[in-house]
Image (spheres, rainbow, N blue to C red):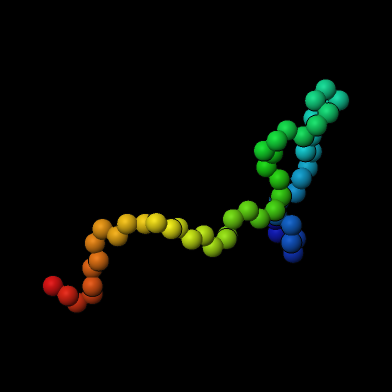
Length: 54
């Protein structure tokens, strides 16, 4: 998207016609998902390398 548009993902047509008459679960939709800090716990350290040490 260019020309000053602030919207990059838009919905368009999100659902089918009369037959299912619903939006299927898991449909990709607009919005940010991710970019969240995540802490990983209970990791095992195998080796520690110090800079300049031999």
